[in-house]
Structures are given as structure tokens and as C-alpha cells.
Amino acid sequence: MAAGAGLLRALGLAALLLPAVPRGPPGSAERRCFCQVTGHIDDCTCDVETIDAFNNYKLFPRLNELLESDYFRYYKVNLKKPCPFWNDNSHCGIRDCAVKPCPTDEVPNGIRSASYKYSEEASNHAEECEEANRLGAVDESLSKETQRAMLQWTQHDDSSDSFCEADDIHSPDAEYVDLLLNPERYTGYKGPDAWKIWNSIYEENCFKPQNVKRPLASGRGDDGGHMFYKWLKGVCIEKRAFYKLISGLHASINIHLSARYLLQDTWSEKKWGPNVTEFQQRFDEVLTRGEGPRRLKNLYFLYLIELRALSKVLPFFDRPGFQLYTGNTSHDAEIKNLLLEILHLAKSFPLHFDENSFFAGNKKEAAKLKEEFRLHFKNITRIMDCVGCFKCRLWGKLQTQGLGTVLKILFSENLIGKIPESGPSYGFRLTRQEIVALFNAFGRVSTSVRELENFRNILRNMQ
Image (tube, rainbow, N blue to C red; front, side, top):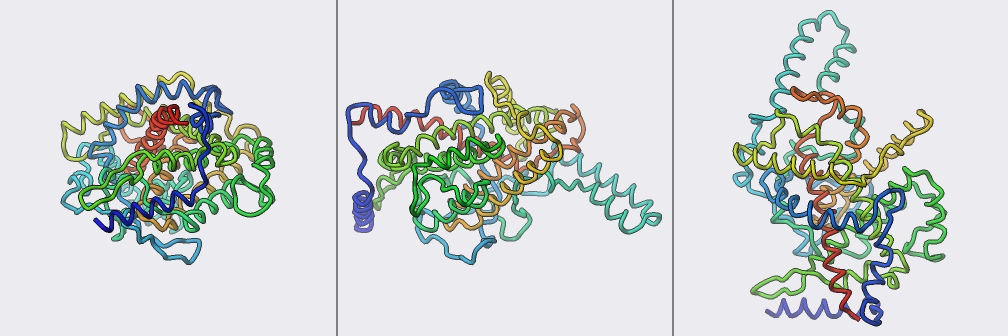
């Protein structure tokens, strides 16, 4: 009990050290956070209100049900990989930073075993083995270089279209985690270590020149973001979109931390719920010098990009040979039907983002820019191994892999269009890891949009 009381006193002291939240007439608190979260979304044909109605009342309930199923709740991850960029092996010692992996016997056999009965992967593997054997029959007549090239071709090396530094799921350090038992929420991980992660992402990977100071960055010379947004408006749509995706992801994560905050910690129970003060500290127009509402608007841009990918990838999942295999045949069929229902719903959205504006124009320059785009994002996925809080690292890795899978889908439209109705899809593939990350990442963004409605309602009645 004393420990719980001590924590509550510490939280109270921390609240006193935060900037004071401005007060005003009823409704002013809502306006300060949501002043820009309305109307048209830049570089899109859509608006905030259309997304709110579509997500909160149509898509979110179905998506939530999907993510509670066995296929989507278990994610294999290596949380022990060292940081590749700086020598900092310090890990968060806060209790809520810990991740509890699954005992092997709790993971459905169809997920953890090498058996892929009923799945497309089984037929793919059989055909690849047959092809490799056929090539092996003429190995003696080929040079070693040609043999290696042929082997690479048969094994389908997709590294050139990958936007992620994916974990080796066969590593002894990779473990299954039940995402429902390790939810994304406030852990207390903040300060210089957390700032270092986001600073590395924004300063080194978002195409920004060093002489352009981003809003709310530490140091002197803060002009309220004027120079930064002047620069951002003048760059190509691809670089502008890249920044807005990262900013939207940042906003989404901050919403989760504010919506699932530790409100009470006693010997008998922990109480988690929305912390309005925390939300205001992150998004109030006055406290963030105008940056908070802009980040919330970028959340809707991220939503449109991820929703567009779901609508595009429907042919991959819609084939009879594709199954979400866990070993429970009837339940697997039900979950696939729910998945297809969600994808058809995504496709029905009336105001999709048009990705055809990306990488248009001169083919050589477009190819170069696309490769830079891919490598910059891949670098961000590697930065996730530098996050000191294991729970933050888990959800950071999952959400960046999910967004990387979104980009892979959007930039593979020609390959997806060639997928046959039956048989293997050699040109385009998604691993189970990518599928789980894709839908859980979109689930996080969808949840953020839904949580904003709750915070709006709370702030509307505050002074």
C-alpha cells in the first residue's frame, strides 16, 4: 500500500512540474487541441469528418474483433537485438516496461510448428522444391555463378522491395508475444532516452536539411516552425508524405499513451484509463506552440495511406488457396471471412488517397527517389532496436513493420495485379509476420482515431 501511495505522490509531483494547462470558457480546451483536426487533409481528396464516421462506426468494431483472434494476437519478435547505431545497452527498469513472452505450449500449434496444412505456403514450398530439383538435374552443365543466380531466383529474394529490417524469427532470441496481454500503454519511459530515438528519426531520416530546425526541437532559434513548414511545403510530395507518415505515427503513439495511462496503482488493483492532462501536454496548441494539432492532422494522413494499402492488397487474401492457419479449421475459416469483410469495406471507402502521384515523372529520378525513400524507412525500423523500454520496443517494431508492409503493398501494385486466382503468387508475397504487423499497425491507427472522439467529448466539457 505504501508503494502505491508513493507512486501516486510521485505522479502528483510530476504533474506539478509540467507546464500549466491554460484555462478558458467551456469548449476552449477542445479547440486548442483540435483546431486543425477538421476539414480537408493536405495532399488528399478526403476530409477528417469522413474518416471519423467511416472508422468509428463501420471499420473499428470489426477490426478490433479480428485482432483478438489467435492468428493476429501472437507476434514473434526479437527484443534482445543490440542497438546498431550507438553504444547504449541501458534498458528501462520500470516495471511496466517489461514484456512477458508466451510459453511455447500457449501458442497455437499451427502458428508455431513448421506445418502449414491448408495454406498457400505449403503449395508454394512444394513447387519451389520441385523447381530446385529440376534445376539441380542440370547443375553439372552450369557454372557455379549461374547455379548461384538460379538458386537465388528460385528462393525469391525480396530484399529489394522490403521497407523493413525484419527480425530473424528462427533466431533463438526470437519469442512469441501475446499482444493482448502486453498492450501498448503508458510505461513511464520518457526523458533523454526517448527523445534520442525520435530525434534520430526526424533529424537523420526524414530528408530534412540540418540547417532547417524542426518544431519543438531543443536548442536556440525556435521560430515556431515557420522555416520548417516553409521548407516542407516546397519539397516533393514523396518527401512531404514521408514526414507526415512519421509525424502521424508519432501522434498515434502519443494518443495510445494518453488513453491508457496508469491512473491508480495499489496493492489490490491497477487502474488504466484516459489522462486528459497528458493528452493536453502533447497536443494543446498553446503548450506545443501549434505543433500538437498539426500532428493530429497527420494521423489522418497516415490512416488514409494504410487504408489504401488494405484496399489494394485484397486480391492477395481473396484467393481460395490462402488461409490464416492456426490449426483450428472452422475458426480459421471464420477469421478469413471477417478479414475479407474488412478488406472489402476498406475498398468501399469513397475518398481514397491516390498513390499514383508518387514517383511519377522522370523514371531514372523517380527510381532513385524511391530507393532513398525505402532505405530511409528501413533505417527507422532498425532504430527500434535502440528503444530502452521493451514494451515500447515491441510496439515500435510491430508498427514500423506494419507501415513498411503498407509501403511494400502500395509500391507493388503491378505485381498484385498479376496475382492469379489460384496457385502461388510468385511476384508478390507477404509473410505471416508482415500480415500480423500490417493489421495490428492499422489497428493502432484506427484505435487512435476512435480515441480522439473520446478526448474531444471530455475536453468539450472542460474549462
